[in-house]
View (cartoon, rainbow, N blue to C red):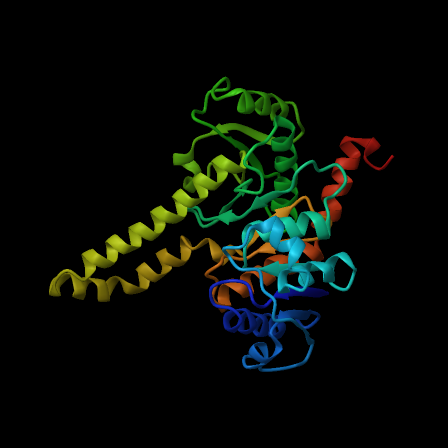
Length: 333
């Protein structure tokens, strides 16, 4: 198996990208990795050259670049060359912690969509209190959506949850403003009917306040709402830990208490860190394209590689295509 990685994307590139890659290569003996970026900078952190190749380029898509323009104009950018490795068959999948919009553009126009998928969905696995996590689609690939898009998201999310996360007959929930069947706007009402009439394990509408309680294994929504929900979960977790830090460092007594509770606090922080589950998959493309968190450290990159490895090994893209063919036999005609 071969994975292409944008070594220059993210806040801590290339150091953490390369270190995470080295860990993955030790873990997976059949894995080969192509690192794309500035070779001189990359080589500083390579501890073994076994099963590692480098494509040298100094061109990078920055976080401030306009996504479509950057992908079209920066032909030799590390992210663009990474995607080409997949589209031209030299890699099975790719990973970047760089500009999210640019990665979605590169995925869509270079890697390409699966036939039968109208719009890809960006899907991270978010933490739950029971430590099982849930998959949310879409969190920003498409700010607008149609009811049939949400059905496609549910199908893709169910396949991934089953094949990669090992969740049998995953529960699918529709993010809404209430749990009653007739709640919501026209999009959610029509999507509700489509999901209810599907063969998926649809559990109905779910509210944002219940997401971390593990009310569903797959939660579908439009990209605008999903992105707001994602940023709210992330921001709340960060704010909570900041408040705890302030509380535990306010005086000598609280500092002593913090010392006693530190192991439990570290476990809690790890439980709420969604980078532990890997990156956000761009589902609906011909091959796995994974968006690692922009602030990923080596462990976050390793988690993203582990997720990508599992997606390739379980042929998630192929299974999505086959499932859609079974539902709509005319996909390839």
